[in-house]
Image (tube, rainbow, N blue to C red; front, side, top):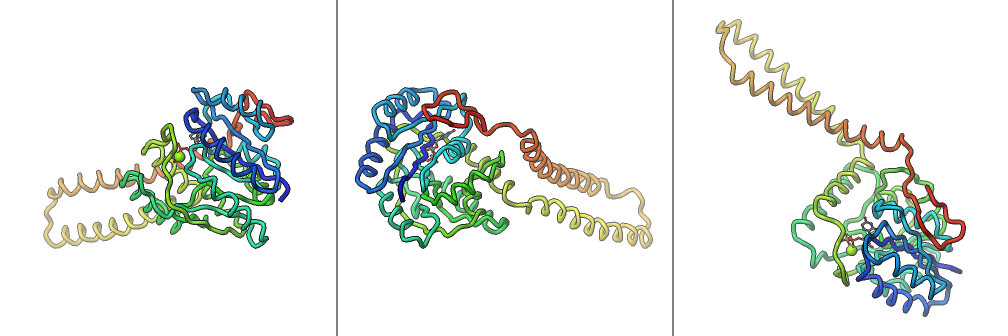
Length: 315
Ligand code: UDP
Ligand code: MG
């Protein structure tokens, strides 16, 4: 490898960034190949951008891209991939939850030529709220059953990959991005490195439980059509049940002939079918909303400031 590019999405990371910069440069300066840090400021409201300006003025290995507003981590990673020009590319969080000490091992594994990417996986979730871990586990179980994107439980976005894989990610230009799914979907030979969970060094997480929940649903909708089939199967099931019920009513009418009974069952059925219909329409609505966002063809990100020559400012 001649040059390794490290993409670092940063959103309000003024507390953690100095630790990260110190640790990563300490490790990268000891490996043989050239490196660059492509820091993407995702519309931070604190001093993240001024810190990045300072690092890049003092260190030619550091460059930065600053968004016009917060576009989200997915957009920040995409901007990094679109602009990084190393022979291999890595993504790392700025909060030290992706241990820089793993980098030499990852590089070594990639250089054996056996793999196209070396990815990391948390084997423990210590320090994380129990309820969050529980939902995360269920999410991995479900998505692996219903989609063809192979997503490993505990997989991090932290991975080192060859140029060919990075190019494939850039080519996946969908607007609704779910990187864990994209990495799995494009294939390539991946080596998994397990490690114990590390807590964030400073600052706080940008993901509330609700935001993560919506992100997980996004992942399912982006990589599986199973919810749509659920809607049609519901339709089939209810038609069959309805047919049986109709038969029952007709037979009862013929045998016993009581015309004005059944108000309660009528209301229950109407309400139940109404609920199922709304639920199914909701599923279709979710897919329609995604399709709407894709067809508008809006840019993934808008760069308002950068020190990288030739950076694509809007993509
Ligand atoms: N991040 C970002 N944009 C956002 C939210 C997060 O670029 O809108 C970055 C953040 O600065 C960090 C990484 O994404 O480098 C992971 O975020 P965080 O540590 O808050 O997530 P967690 O590790 O808690 O899942
Ligand atoms: Mg984190």
